[in-house]
Structures are given as structure tokens and as C-alpha cells.
Image (cartoon, rainbow, N blue to C red; front, side, top):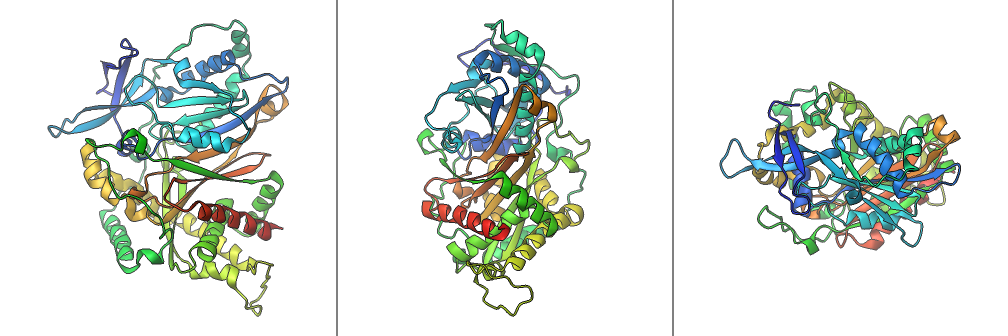
Length: 515
């Protein structure tokens, strides 16, 4: 444990005897996630999974509680909370610390619900619009167990990212299939308190501290000026999501958004059946691209051709997993927030041409009933893939932009004054695609006991005044199962019919491309 760790008693009312141990000062992006939750800007992320068993067992409270004991013991990060302390550098300021709860009361964090209908869409949307209480008494995650079949892992971004959501479900699945867990649930213990294990070594530092890349101030200044110039040259009407309607009021520590005025997330979903998904993956490999890049391209085509036909320039962002760029690498099974994004600009005319082309003299042109230039779409998807790959292997612009957070001050007030005004510079008028890849199902999990047959991923909308007036496409699938794209957006910012039109356009063109 770090030298600056110390014990502090929680000052909450419900459990005044609880204690937490201060571990260390939070990483540079800890204050951002803490403030997003505390001020009503963004609530949580969700990774959901559908469980089934060979013998038709149910996800009963005793089974869940006993399995959670194992999961929490394997992942002490689940006991991490954020605690605000006085700044050591500036009088009157505050510094965020990571702290570990001593105990977790399972009944406080597990909710068993039986909601009408089996579609996870509405359940995920409801969970996005419930907020954590950051008073030091409860962890920054919870479980929703729906119809004894679906489990939603609802998590604060401070302790985990989407990939860590996969890790949670893999651990929970293994615990449910553990023989000892099964035997213990037969006794139905009334003890619902878990003591959080103190690991023998300190948990991994925040990923920004583990990136083995030297920050180039010259490059950072160039990036900043590049985006500034783009904002000056292009009017809002020439960009995507120019019709977004929202209040530009920013919250402060003294005046957070009132409880009734916090960001409201809406979710629309697109399900791609397993057979079509497998064909997509095979086609992507043969066209030197990835499923992420293909979906990104189809989104750009639909936005340019169907919704914003007058727009000139498009912004897109692709979420990237930093684990491979960290040293030491925390590993795929470590719960950590290690996500960043690659921001890119695209002239939209070429994407518009992909569906408006009529020039049949072009070599290998194949016109569909939608007049879609199939070779051009694949070419654009390949280019999108290579731009991202080139950046991650050579330019490292995404890593440099991610590390720019180290230039901010350490205090919470510093992040508000320096970070908040620039959040929209890279993200405003953009969409984000975040693909967790396939949840892998092991042979043992398929042949006996419990198994996971379906997964979904969704991140709550970020307040539009912080530059996220666009949409977030959250992609997940299980090996051998369907793929689901959950599109999240802020209520009242975009026209619902436009959002539906966007998903319909992506689905239609994907079918045309693969059929």
C-alpha cells in the first residue's frame, strides 16, 4: 500500500461504524469521473449479461450473494471509492483520493427486479438514470438481477471501463460454477457483509500513470491549434449534429445540476443476428478492415447522406483499450479504467458519394437498389481502420491527447477551471463508437453449469454542454451469439426520429453490404 495511505472513518449516517482506508491520490481523470457523477453530468456504464443453466437453476439471492463474495475477493477494486480531502497545495482547494471500503453490505448493492417484458433496452435506460450516492458508505457499483436471468453490472467509470465489465461477468460466471459456492448456497447463510480483501500489492495506478510515452508539449499545442482552427473555419451548420438543442449552463461545485435536472439518458438498440455478424466478420477480414471500422463507416455514410446532407466535415471518435500500451500491463482480468479515444475528422462528400453515386463507368462499381457503391464503402472502412492502426503504432496522437490530462492541476478546482472549458473542443459535433469485442465463452462453461448466452454494453450520455451533443454507439456480443449496438444519447438534445433514422440506415446498409 502506498506510503500516504491512512485510515479514516466514514461520516455517513446509515452505517456510522464503517471505515475506509485512503490508498492514494486519484489519477488525473479520477476528478473528471467523480465530478461528472457528483454534478449530474454523466451517471454510469453498464455491461449486461444473460445467464442460463443446464439444469434450469435460477439466479437466487443465496447463489448471487455467495458468488459475489468470491468476485469481490478476487477484485479488490470493487471496494474502491472516491474521497475528497483538503488540497495539500492550495488552501481552500480539494484533492480527490482513492479509498477502499472495509466492508460491503451485499443487500445494499444487489436489486432483484421483475419488470414486465424481456427486452433489456428499457431496463438499461432505467439503470442509466439512477445515480450513485458518493457519501463513502457504499461502493461505486451495483447489480440488477432481472427475471433471475439477466444481470446488469452498473458501474462508476472511476473504477472500471467496459472491458472490466466483461471481467466482472467472467468472474461471476466462474464463481457460480464453483462447486464450493454451490454447496455454500445450500446453507443459505444470513451473513450479507463482505470484508474487502486488502491485496498484498497496491492496485494498478490509474492508466495515465502507466503509459510509457513522453508527453510532447509541441505536439499538444499543435493538436490544440488544429482543432481551434477547424472550429473557426467551419460553421456549426457545416458540421454533424448541428441541430442539437441544449442549455449551455455549466454546473459548479456550489451549484450542481439539481436532482431533477441531471442528464437523462435515452437508449435505442440494434440487434444483428449471429449469422449476419459472422458474415460481417469474415467480410471485414477479406477487405482489410474491422467490424468497428465498418460500423463507423456506415454511421458516417448514413449521417452524411440521410440526416445532414449539407454538412461538410464530420468528427468521429473510436474508443481504444490502453492495456497493451501500459507498463506494467495490468492484464485483461484486472479491473481498471484504461479507456481512451482516437478523434478523427472526415470530409463527408466521399461518404455521401457512397450512396449517391451513379457513375457506372467506375471499375467494379456495383449499384444496389439503394445506389450504394459497395467497393467504395469497403475502401472507406479500410481507410478508417488504417488511420486508427497507424496512429496507435506510429503517430500516437490518441495517447498524446489522453496524456494531456497531466497538464492540468491536481485539485478538483483545477479540473473545473482548466479541463471543463476544453472538453468540447475534440468531442463536440462528434459521435463515438465503443466496441468491447466478443465475450469469449469457454468450453467448460458451455458444457455444464451456468453459461452466458448474451451480452450488452451501454454508457450513459454525457451532458451536451460538455461537447457530447452527438451519439455513442456501444457494441458488444458473445462468441456464438447476436451482436447488439446500444445507441445512447441525451434526452431532448436530438430529434428522436433522427436517432431512429440513423440506426435504421446503418442496419439497412449493413444488410445490403453483406447480402
